[in-house]
Amino acid sequence: MRRIVVLGAGGYFGAAVATLLRRRDLAFVPAGRRKSAAAMHVDAEDARSLREALREGDVVIDAAGPFQKRSAALFEAAIEKRFDVVDLSDCLAYARTAFAMAPRFERSGIRVVTACSSVSAVSAALVRATGVRDPAVARVFLAAASRRSARYGTSASAFDSVGRSIDVWRNGEIGPARGWGEPRAFDFPAPFGRVTARLVESPDAIFLPRAFPSLRAAEFRAATRIRGLDVLLSVAARIPPLLALARLGLSPGTVALMRFLGRDGGAVGVEVEGADGVPRTAALCGAVGAHFIAAMPAALAAVEIAAGRVAKRGLLDPGGIVGDREMFRELEREGVGLTVAEK
Image (cartoon, rainbow, N blue to C red):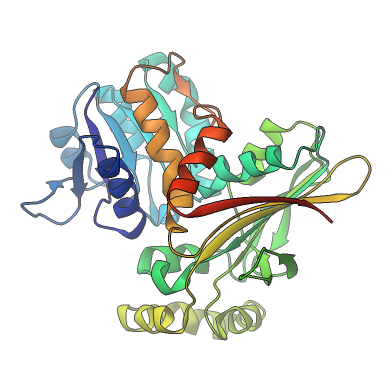
């Protein structure tokens, strides 16, 4: 096995990746921006730090969000030092950066897997789970496990789409929509029930149409499940001064309040329509282990690469390294169940 390095190992999703690796008795090096005896010091935005800490042949799992604030520094270092990268990015702009650099990844002989998380690895697997052969519409719904997941990075990511023009896949092409608008309900299995979620920008806008060429529309909606926050953000999205105030108020204190007001358990679901127009749904739900939904694809993909079982190089499909059945089976071991239904 090659060396696996987990960037952002002290964060919420980085810690989840680390837990998954430990439970499988896999050695890895935790890394983060803060200097500590327990982790290697690596700043994902500092070129010198990356060059000094990482080496040729490493497999780097990047969980150092929010990716909306990230540059291409890690990608540049990977090309120079020749190490592979698997990230948990939920940012469309970051995915576009990876696509623009794809020819350079291939020339350097490295592997880069971006959006290997709830988006777009899990969302693509759920679309396939519905059994719709030629999906025309895919709507993805995220119900956050906010009592656990509300952190500065995850909150900054959620706030990023609120009130601005975002890109979504509609009518067979990328087009604009208003972030945190167009609420739509999804019926998750008990005990979650009906959850109303709102449009956010996502790498699904480019990855799902690549995985399913028949798709005419691919939308991603999220619900914070923090009491009162979704409605507040929906109002703020229409009032710029109120939105600016909400963003300025994002601090450790307010994030701690979000956790207090949040809910346990989390889920990701899809509603898929084929040529017959009949909606079919699939969902992954966890009362305790929901954070592993985002972490599992990256952990499994990194292990496959580190073990030498991935021959292809360049920019790889986030849903093309680990089989859906294996991922669902591993998530079930962590308390996350799959449900498939037809409306």
